[in-house]
Length: 389
Image 1 (tube, one colour):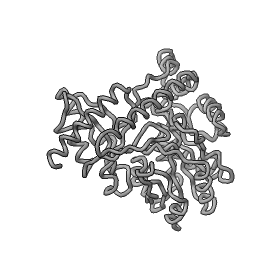
Image 2: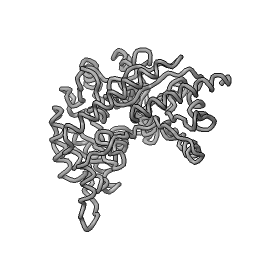
Image 3: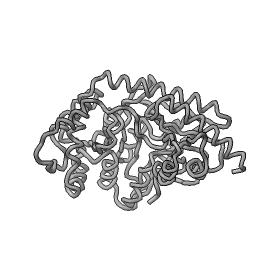
Image 4: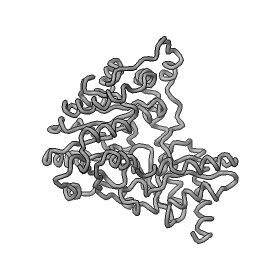
């Protein structure tokens, strides 16, 4: 199992914090946005006498309300097609275990969310990658590049739309081309759509469930963590119309007994979050994105493409090895009692030799803190490179 690039430096951050250093944490997608009041009220008003198991598939009340939520995005599903999971991570793991046997191959774009690779390793599956490049904003390459990776062992294509870590948003044409491949080779399409609320372009959001002719091939991955700033409640979802996949996933669900009871109560209440809250959050992330990208690109040698969605950006830094640089920032550097924590880029690539000059940043801090973080990064690069690193 590889270490998480998002969390592997935590021990150094903890040590720096104990020494009184203030850390601007841009490494992890933990928003500083306040959780909706309706979700917090669900905790305050919870009065059950017994904290019992919930159904392995998740509570029917939550699943019924999720159907209404998805309908707003033109996604037509039933409660029986939704399986509530312990976060989106468990949904990914269960999708892998249900759809892939050991030795089977799954195609992802490179770079991609680090746990896609980690979960594949834990399931004995093999990840094949299609390269995207920072120079053109991680634009999806021609669909022929996907087809080149298909072998007799290929079972699935996994996409993240909008993408973590690049912020790229798939176009309708790109989604249709992927659909055609899925249909041609009878593959599963695993679609992580956690960030659908955060799209900063006029390009429309296309769900895998909007694609005609592959309804039985789609497994949708979702989570309430980022949408409502509910990372700690650990509620996600796996959604599929494929009865065989559903049946297989339910075996894993029964083995882990049930998803978190209180988490489901909170998530169900969060579905009543006012549109005004979501609009304010959207506007805030858009401002943060614009501010951070502008500030980063003013640092000599730094390049940050503009993300179209989510709240991450892959950034090119003028250093030889961001694994070493990110660790150094936490162990050997501070500017006026401050430093910055980032996720080294190599952990988001299938080949760890790639991405060595990149980091992933999450713009989950307010603009004032982002400004301070960028200043600290600028100073860190000056000192690091002056030392001949």
